[in-house]
Image 1 (tube, rainbow, N blue to C red):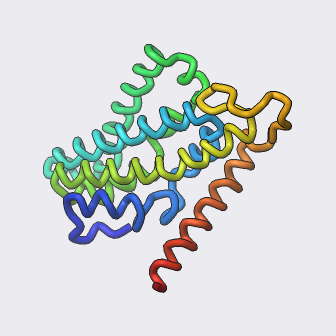
Image 2: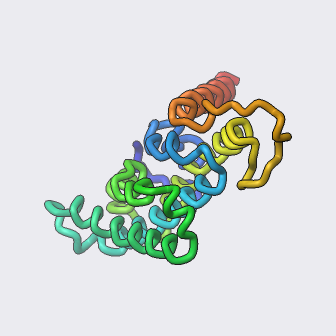
Image 3: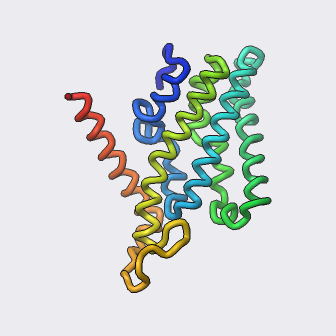
Length: 204
């Protein structure tokens, strides 16, 4: 992962495509396999990750000159954990059903490699404005992978979209599409297609 001199909006754009955390670095795929069987859950997970990334990167960047180098990783984890706990409390209060369906995966944002990578690899060395844009870009880049997969898996596996029936009930549902292995194959296929498009564009 390159920190380089990339600043401002360029830091945002590169995380969407050039250094997309899922496509380019194969990070954060645990949640990709687990929550993409329902579009609603996937959207909540994506919004939670974007919020955590933005706020964690902002906080770490603001504190970067006072955080002791020896304990920086511990402090970063504590900062990330505080925002994840906040998200969990909000979900429990306002969206208890989704919170139960997501189960431990919201809490696992704390150890998500994308969040840790952006706080340590970028926010610790850059100004708050740049760090926030980088974090939001990484979160949206993550969402651009998970949401399309969920949009395919839920209708094929359950015949629904956002919980609403969109495929006739007599249509044979692909039950395998809502289990974790299908998420693995869907993610692998998505990454393969995107990388093929990227390599084709680079050749041209």
